[in-house]
Length: 254
Image (cartoon, rainbow, N blue to C red; front, side):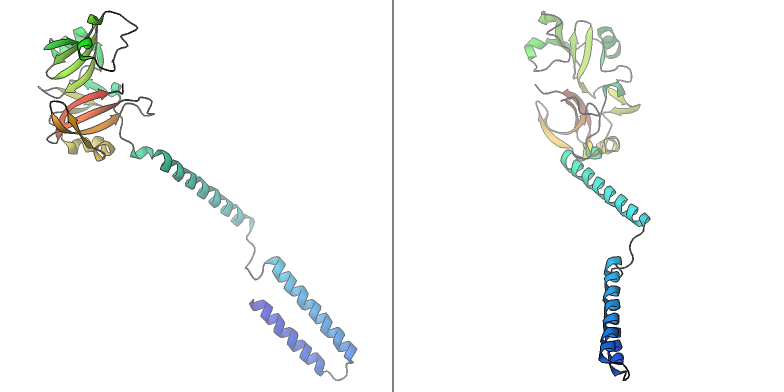
């Protein structure tokens, strides 16, 4: 607008001075004014075409940078929308893989009857699964045998193990009588506090809740995922009593 105003003032001044020249005829004065007017119109047109009033036109580098910023903003917006829909991976409860666990520092989750007796001793008691009628089995027993006497629970120091013939697997593990696990080399036992667990499983402890456990009452519980990609429908329940590690149980829906 500043340049347009200046040109307008110059046009008016030119017309004024031309009109005051005594030797020029009216026809010549008109021609001079028309010529100046055409120059004025041309100048205004040039200003609008080149964008002079809006500032200089951006160079190629600035255009490319603006396009990159626009693309990045769209990408970030898309990521934010996806995180809003699915939840950030960093906010999910942590994972406890079977391969990262050693019970009493020796056995993985699956082992033999001989290994069970060597590490834990003889079972305190046994019970047929047919009596307990669990809705899920650790071992795929239906396709392996029709003899239900092959499917038992071993009970030892409050822990429960599923047994199929010579196979044994941990179902529920109690941190009693010096029982412990090594998780990625770190010892977790009945002396492990919720503060120590928070260092290993910050999200899970943050999302900690309570559960009414049969024969125990209300216990604090944290849930850990079984795999990174959430393929499993199950999870691990880690129970705490009086702020310390109490027992763990693999849960799977019926």
